[in-house]
Image 1 (cartoon, chains in turn orange, blue):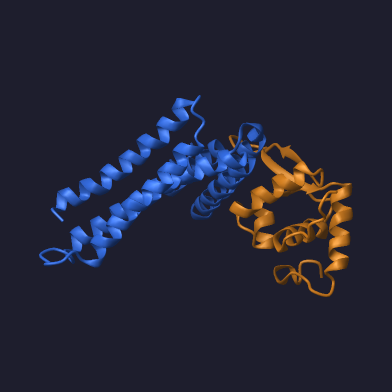
Image 2: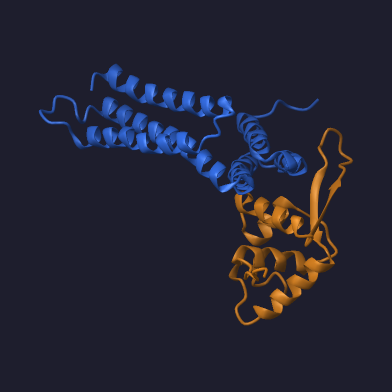
Length: 103
Length: 162
């Protein structure tokens, strides 16, 4: 029987941040600034969510010459569902770093 | 014409490439993402911080992708190098500060140095017992690095005549 694990505070924080403007594609550094999660924690989280089909990613080309394309992320439909249920479950105890992000 | 990159920017690029190399083979897209994200952060220092953090993230990811035995082997291969570097630091500090020099008994730093070196032995034993002996290069490389670390630490002791 698969285990149902409670998401870590960082995962909750990440889901909530991505839910705040669910249609927007965000890059890693922007997500890091929004959530306070550093790259060392953020990348494994993003990879995990991506592997589970909760996160979509795409490459955005830069118009300015010589700049590399940027990897962008946003929640998939199932990611959105999880983020919403997570938000509802944690309404009573919001993640401190995100107080104000959704308001 | 673009101005030459600063030293910090060059370090950030090196760190981002190191992070990308740490990632397991199936993560090439994420490796590219780490490199390009670092490049697109305007502030050089922030880019360096991001890239160094990415190394930790990539290492975690690499460890996660390994089988438990492989993971133990990887960690036990790296710990002796860290211990040797610490021993090197202790010897260097002792040599530069001269804190243990001329003492009739070995000082605390000498004992810390000895403990660090001796602690490597059981960890090397774990490394050897969990190694895949069909892949000699994967055994030889960490062993050579470990030997280099010990040589550096002992060489420092010899250099300062501690």
